[in-house]
Every structure is written in C-alpha cells, then in structure tokens.
Image 1 (cartoon, one colour):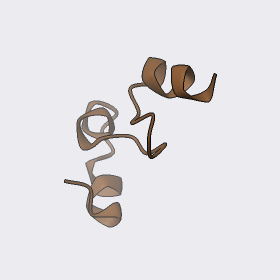
Image 2 (cartoon, rainbow, N blue to C red; image 1 turned 90 degrees about the vertical axis):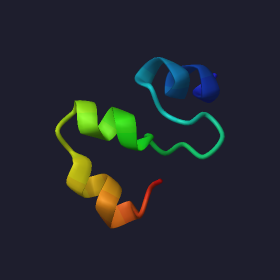
Image 3 (cartoon, rainbow, N blue to C red; image 1 turned 90 degrees about the horizontal axis):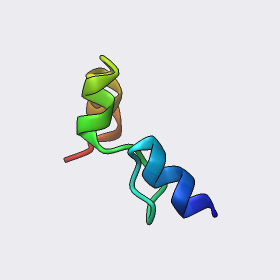
Image 4 (cartoon, rainbow, N blue to C red; image 1 turned 60 degrees about the vertical axis):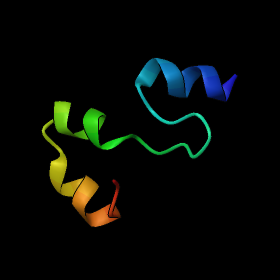
Length: 38
C-alpha cells in the first residue's frame, strides 16, 4: 500500500524519497541538494 502512495506522489517506492525531478517541480531543488540526490 505504501508503495502505491509513493508512486502516486511521484516518489521512489523503494527508498521513500522524492526524486530530484519531483522536488524541482515543487520548487524545492535546495532540498535535493541537501539530500545529495542525483
């Protein structure tokens, strides 16, 4: 169930982290930089 939620939110279902693209769409690129996401 949680994997489905993550997919719907645009997050990685394996790690539970949002990918850089999702954060950039939300104008949160700085968070991706802090988390050192590829």
